[in-house]
Length: 300
Ligand code: GRG
Image 1 (cartoon, rainbow, N blue to C red):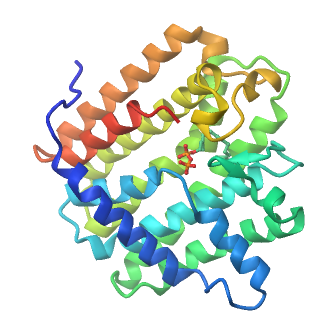
Image 2 (image 1 turned 90 degrees about the horizontal axis):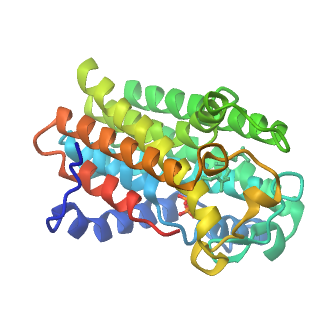
């Protein structure tokens, strides 16, 4: 069943305010660019500029659906974007994906230097946990739960582990199940944890946690399939990063294993399952439906 919402969305009108909250929180968590050592702090801020902020919006959308006040979501939204920014900075390094372009401009190691880019990733990661530890909007139990969930999603059993498997898989044709497992960790874990963070802020029931987790897992995988599709069909200017890299690096991708059309259909089906999960959570799940549509329609 396709439940794509075509109506004007109320969440849409609140997105600018949520992005403003994110920018304000990030600005208070990161030291000013003029702080010693200046070059590092400038580079930290450079790494956080641009981007679609989909993961932060997922925290706000899931939280809003569960009736959580925005101030209880700010630290989580900021923390997940800081982890994401660190992962992109490190992924772009010569020792990993070796890319010159990110978010439409030079990668951190090109704009600064390699050592600075490594340190930027390190500092962004620790800042994410500092943001959660320092917020006054959550109780101690919620903070510990959020820090644990985010550390698990970002670590060797999640994003970092997925990256390791991805790097070891270059020049190999992976079975589909292995490709899905790799991406459930590399890209999916951080997207999925956005929903977990919102349920922690909401003190949600097991039933709600389970349904939101299903939403997050489906969006995470659909997002990656779409990323593979866009890498193949979109151009570098639209993507803001080098197009066609998967093919150039002989990586297994969803289009290379399934064909372009089947990969697109698989992503479509996952977005529909995510919408079903959103409907099962609440009759007021419009923020989650908006986000599924928004991500499905993205061109970069
Ligand atoms: C280096 C520890 C470490 C991990 C890297 C996620 C990741 C793991 C690397 C990124 C490689 C990549 C481009 C994966 C495809 C999916 C993805 C994360 C795309 C970028 O996310 P967007 O489109 O980025 O949300 P913006 O720029 O909008 O924030």
